[in-house]
Amino acid sequence: MRWTTYLPGHFELARGTPADYFALERFHYRAGRPATWAGVWVVRHVDGGARRVVAVGVLSYPCVAGAARDRALGLERIGARERLRFVNANVRTISRVVVHPQFRAMGLASRLVRTMCARAGVRWVEALAAMGRVHPFFARGGMREVGVTPKGVVYYLFDREGER
Image 1 (cartoon, rainbow, N blue to C red):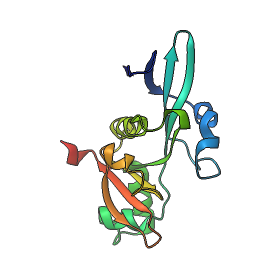
Image 2: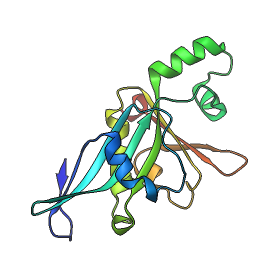
Image 3: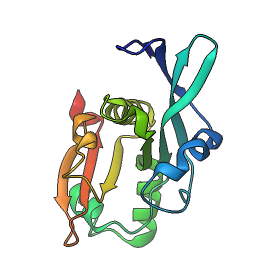
Image 4: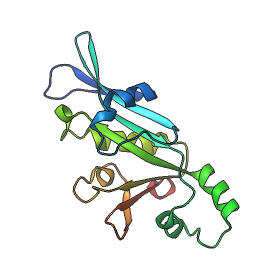
């Protein structure tokens, strides 16, 4: 996908690699790398011959325990093994969205979220956002706020079937 803005050049959004994440890792508020990698999407700014990674999103395999997910999808009553099989087959987690500080407030995070949800290859995509109320790009990217933990972390869910 390619688009232009008021900046010289244009943006490209495409599949990426962990190396693209590592290029912006230092700008993420949370230390450490994603535990798993199910997919990486990257936004590059292209101006003349220069190509620069300016935003990246990482899709991961979900963790087994997820009280908000279990409530949202009605999984509380099924056994742990069956729940694990179901979640691995049907859910992916947006584990990181990073935008270079010079390119923030341009809608890049929302575009990444929309793209990851559309191309995840599963019915549900989830995200936990510690700053979800302050920076609601998951909601702007098409995800629905499902709940908030006692610590204020917002749980978002995208349902591919609900979008039809």
